[in-house]
Amino acid sequence: MRNPLAGPNIIGGVSAGGGLAALIILILFPEFYYLVPAGAFIGSLLATLFIYALAWKDGALPTRLILAGVAVSSLLNAGINGLMIFHPDRVAGVISFM
Image (cartoon, rainbow, N blue to C red; front, side, top):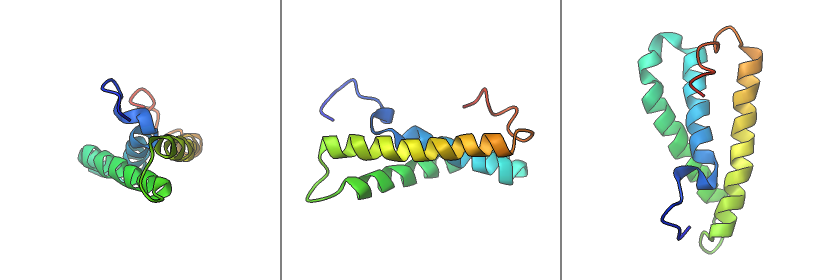
């Protein structure tokens, strides 16, 4: 974004993708809790690739990246909130993590 102070959440979906992937692992496969960092990395990577795919049209302009990131972030955060609503017993300890 041509800003040296920009963080990884400037396009939005990176942290939300990692959070959703980590939450899915902790809900569906709690015995594989040690895979959470790798799953979060893969979720962040997939979210980033999805954002770039949405924003790509003759190149990825910063404005399109930010808007696609906000949209994907909203979608992924809705998934996180939905999982937290439907599985409150399994995510009681995860809420402080998120």
